[in-house]
Image 1: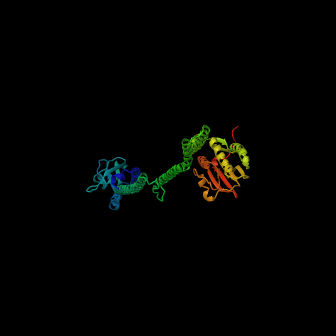
Image 2: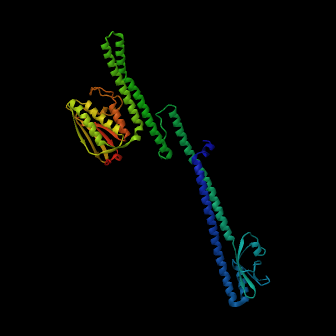
Image 3: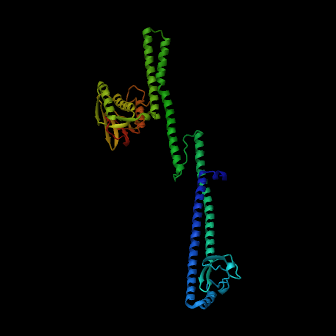
Length: 458
């Protein structure tokens, strides 16, 4: 990986930003530590000098000038302090401090100005006390320790800053390299998918960072797209297969009518049969278009609260005469005022398709039960019958487009009724499950907890 690519990554820029902020904080801490330490040491040094000066002043007050001179001379040989005693004319009476201003208080002077025949760049802290007889007493101490401590602090923090910069830059390059490596892997995988390998997926690491979460989301999207493409291909094959027979039959009728001398009445019969075939083909296309509209999710914009109990009751009452004509009975157990947020027209079609499927694909004397209730904070619509049922291996297949079990249910139709019902359930975030009713078939539609029943506004 080239250096410009690494430097240009977002992770490196963020690392540089955080490094800059950390360095500013580190420098602020260093400056604070330096000044607090120097100030603390200066205060300790001044307290010591003031204490020594007070002791000498006490000697003067008790025993006079002569004793003060002797004390300065004696202490000056082994003490770390420097002393000076001058008169009103600036003449040195005792000690080794040669230069200081005859004014009370603190003074800070370079070593070269304080002591004779000495060299050094450190400073002396001098405390001056006025004495009677127009004399001035000065006590001082070098600030070399303070300066060395301050210099050590500065050196330590400069070394720390250099180390932080090195580690920050190294960390930035490492993170950028890892980030760029993952981006390159995602880019290569994307190019593979663009090239036509729709089964390929973006790589996902074990740590599941933000990029991995994004890759998982994209992979889910690719799975959905793959399923849609496969569905479209399957629909195309199903349309070609299922519509071939009625179109061929229509073609045969028209050719037969064209080639044979028929009477006007016979022509009318052939045209009527052809129109019937065309109506069946158009009904199939209309159903496919309706499924496509439902699966697109565009109907969600019209969702509102509807009374599912009223819908189930109305559909059941409408289809009961149809069932009675076929010597079948429908029993309904519907809890009142079960409300659901959804599309009333589609929910009506859902109940109609499921109940019509139970009526149309069962033999005479079949008992059908429609049960609408709430359980475990979910709304369940159950349609069960005691007919021949469906083998477990075919239960998911009957939800596919154009799939029909002709061997067990010899009925007319295009095989789209249950597929439309499944699309409606999916649009309302529900589930549609088929199971064995022992005997017969049980269809269970379950809607999520956000559809929990509420009283309808009056």
